[in-house]
Figure: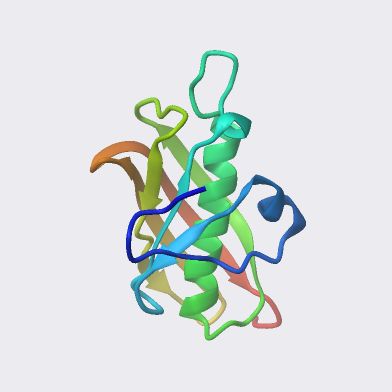
Length: 134
């Protein structure tokens, strides 16, 4: 799978994410852009990216941003709200630049707009728990 110039493959460790990857990234901690190239495994019978794939990628991308935001402490998804805005198809490059909107002692709040060629196709807001912190 090819990525645009400047992207490198993200080291995925979750077995399910590895199965649907690869995922690519560019940028520095706290300001990363993550993306993936849609292949035939990612689309439904109508040739459109499956919503479950978008949500899996969102969980991986937001998880990376949450992990970076708490200096690589263990984090888990508490809540993820998503809106499907437009279709994406095989061959499309989907990317997101997660935005940290709030951080407390034990929670991280993130949002992201997922785009194809700059056009929003999917939007997510998520809340993450930093494990071991009350």
